[in-house]
Length: 268
Image 1 (cartoon, rainbow, N blue to C red):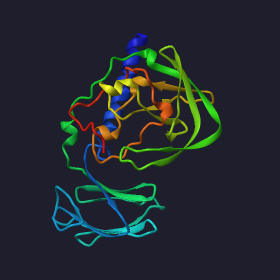
Image 2: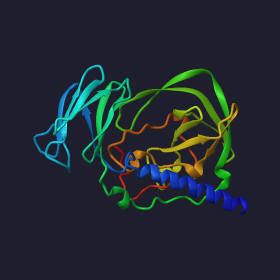
Image 3: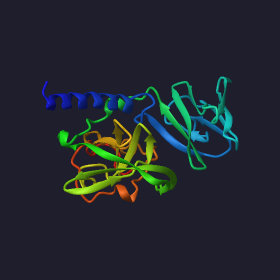
């Protein structure tokens, strides 16, 4: 195969993995809702008298009890008890057709529930893409900051978060020197949240995500062909981070996923 066909084949393989994660049972398409919860007892089910009312399923699925110490339990309607403990990694569980988890945003806690029988994945419209451009797979300089910093970043729901930053990626694009800060991800797969001028018409309005690849001590590969819509483009029940000001670019980066016109484009 030629370099171009190799590149296209690698991209197709990446996109297949991307879609399998998006449409999986623990993906973003089958979320029924996100409910902010506080310590106490919460009944969950389709019955209108419940604290958390579901659009499907039995009248009563079960009862959630949460403590101040991020422990608790879930008791099914049949009386089966499941202990919960955030520190021990037991803050997610399955019951009936539902996958439930308690998520954290600073001091806030939210109950997120997925319907494993949902057909939402089959109803997802094809995600449009810019044409592949091998030139937009960029090897950037990966420079440690003089000192790690803590950034205050806003989220799409207006709740700011603190994130540590230790490196910056620097590269040339459209004849100018550009820099991006990684604000999430891992050391070997840093995540960049950015926005460029395509957000005005062709891409999701608030942000896009792209992950660094092939990280070395002094370099990181950023393939903008693999820039993706955030979870908030597909569901109003996700909490997505907004880009730091350093990652707001006054140019068009015409690569990666375009706006999902039939999905939620307003965020959460």
